[in-house]
Image (cartoon, rainbow, N blue to C red; front, side, top):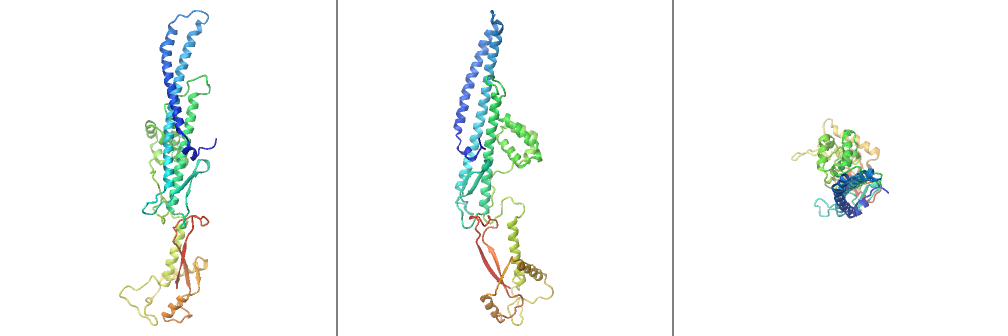
Length: 399
């Protein structure tokens, strides 16, 4: 049998497990009645009788063993009932939660004011994981918020599948220990719930402390949700700090970027896309600083100079920003990050309007620079994906 899958969790008929628990409950009730009759009737009659004959020496022992076996069968039935009922309740809760999360992912949120959330597709992934994809691909690509939601739904549903698999494994172990290896000899381990199987595992994981890895901490959180209040109190009393370190009180709400332009949720430092965006913005700012476009006289101030009455004021002394910006801009030109293009006819018209003949040597290098700016979000999928199309426009600024 393969790994417990998402489809198994969603489609399994837990009503059969509940019916099995009810059947065993009826069996346990019948064995309890029979055990009472054996001890109060048969055993007392056997012990009080004066046996004689060839089998007189073994009759009393036989009756005692029979009475004990009936009592052991009653205890085994009670243990099986407790395990089945606990497992049925746990699996029902997990299945209900998985169906709710799946329906929420498929529906999306088309009425969201800050931007609708698209519907998503949920399917089986490899090795018991869950795969969440977009139902439709838009021309604007996949927004960061949609990526965060896809990741949150996949992680949440995978955790629920893992939880169900752990409950299934726990009930298997408990049933084997309750029944034992000899079908003719009842009376072995007894369980009042799955706590007897899950609490030792939770205690072991909590005792790892900081040495526990991410998977072990996730398992510890799932075990905590399955434990009874009494078992939780016992575990909390001995491993409070370890449980807090495992993220026991961490929020379980959806964690996603608020809009398309935001970065990923919970990012502690900028990634490659943010660094590239910052470099683009720096280049644009340095180009403007080199041409003097960000240095305009304030209102009420006019600086006149021959041949150009509306130009910027003459600069006296050293202006570090121009030289520094120009050096980095020329480095960008040489590296190919910015592509120069010939002066356009519009630029020639502006040159004539400033009183300089077209084709004459300008004060600075007479070229126009094409700076690409993207209207897509800062983070997107690789351009090879149909859902990661980036629409860009170019803007030319002369200097």
